[in-house]
Image (cartoon, rainbow, N blue to C red):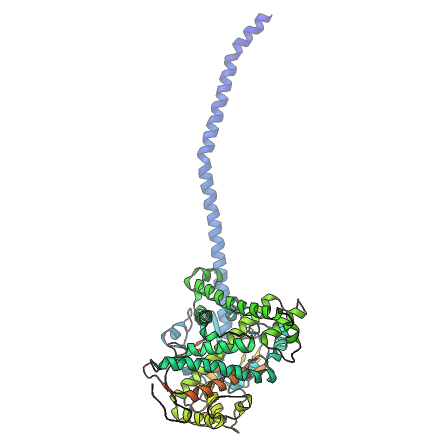
Length: 550
């Protein structure tokens, strides 16, 4: 029996072996089939995925196109009451402004469309440029915010200080800083302003002994920075001889041009893309230089206040300067002003407190150089008031009426801030019946307003009598410091500095234009010149005496 079982097993073994081999071949065949089919299936899956992605991209693109088309139609309807020159459906008036410089083209529009006109930045982006006093009064009398899509580019430089703040926080900061511009404080600044001007004039004397031609904007910028550092930030050094200060001035100049350029480049609107461009890297470096300067100012003042007795001594003063108000606001209530807010306010006022006044002084000097009869009359007035000019005080500033008239007329022709913007938060209807819906960008062109022939007859003529005592004009016809609740907080400080600078300069030098380098105004944050402001200076041997040509 055991033998039979054994033989059965031996006989059955070959069959099972064949079955096993067949099964292995089948599995090997299946494995080969899978290995052959897997790439095909994978490729089919990738292809299908690409088709889905392509289809979704096409749908999103069509939706975006439809959105842009509907937005353009909305803009066309919203702006139909405000005519403008023909524009291209895609790049708007871009080509027109590339072929001709900004301000001459604006003046052509002011003459053709006396109150306001539309300007197409791109096919789906437009604004209304306003240069009529009634229109100005209506917009500035409201509380519309500044347009984020344009002002946001300032944020990385000056942060959200008084210039960029909105709503209740703006109101709180404005109220907190207003005491820094109290008359009692401004009176003490006149002597500091005069000292800074004299340092600049001493430098000019050395320079014109070699060459009477001088580009003044850079020198005036250093002088106004020196003034604001001493007046508002209690700085004790000499900014006009400090190389770091010159680096700061250059950084501010670079930032102004870079921001102006970025606003007009469609490919630089995205922050990530912009950072990768050469312009974006220059912008970043310039911001670093500006921030290093303001951080050093804050650090220096904090260190001074930490000295024994200094903090309480300053706190007991009836009036405080700009930076001390910011620092004490933080010291008294740690949550009231963060380090970020503190730096933003310092960055904002450091820029606005020196660059706008530098623009104003430089253009005033150019206007007086171009009109020697008015320059001489101002000089005679100042001589009769100051004599040798050894001292100028607060009381003198209200006793130079003709010089003040000339300063205002120069500010009319060359407003330091040529334009600001607002985004309408609600519909508006102007006195002539035309209206705009909420969401429209409005560009308030002070340059256009000051050159509007319906507001100022013969607007290109330098005529100080427009501002003679007793003369009348529309309340919003002359806005060198803006208007409404958001006007320039430091306008009285600026006017005092303009008067001090003009008076002391005219006592020391006779000015004339450089005919080979006529300045070309351009609106780059503040009103600058594309080729600088070049003057010929002739030193006066003594106040009222004969002149020595150097």
